[in-house]
Length: 174
Image (cartoon, rainbow, N blue to C red):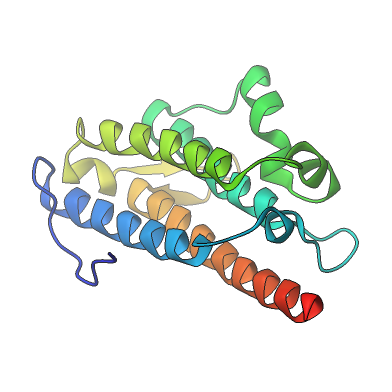
């Protein structure tokens, strides 16, 4: 059941607990959107060069993984990590081919594994950390609060694409 409240999570500083609550709500709505999804829907592509729902789900996991590395380890992806997550990050045909033939459980497992690292890592941090400012290579400032806002923003955007693809798949199938 989806919780429609932003609450403070026990065991976390106030703002981090609220952030986790928002991340969990975002994920709960995504999971609700996937209820009853078929493999045909997971692999449906509306137009050449587009993305499948499966690729979008792996992209959501990949974005969260990359933002873990940026914020918790303050580094870029290694070559090995880029090999694992690169197709999901970039989407398109390479991702669609990579994530073809999987079951919804495979995607859900990937999302959950990444999320468990996020929650565990947040448990070691304070609200002050969220506001710590850093600079990208181009000199533009950011803070960790923004990084995690972007993780939610990205999932919500791609959930909209997932809804659209499911609707178009059903229309095509009728």
